[in-house]
Image (tube, rainbow, N blue to C red):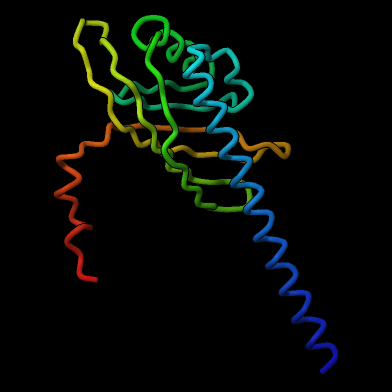
Length: 166
């Protein structure tokens, strides 16, 4: 009986420790998302090495696929120098789901201000949703992949999930 109680206590302690670690990891990931938002709002992405992996990739909102940090940093900065110079981003939400102890999927919702495209079209402010993949390397959470889309409010009204039986 004593052995069973000790074993049960050990199992409960390990679950508590895991939950605490997950909470700390989720907070660390959110700080990395905040660093990305700060880079955006400063319109300077030279600090990407602090929150991305060397082999990170990104698929942007119009389907351009940048395949390593060098391409992601160059391309992001390229557009900030030309069309996002004064466009702010506001973090609206971050949801973290752990796939393993060292891999997390992050749904990041933001509000991006209006901007003018390279061909002169004015685009209004909009909410975006990004799916980000984070990996833990040497004790630090880094983004290794991302893709973002504009949230279409008209289409959201027709989301089949809204019609699912409860």
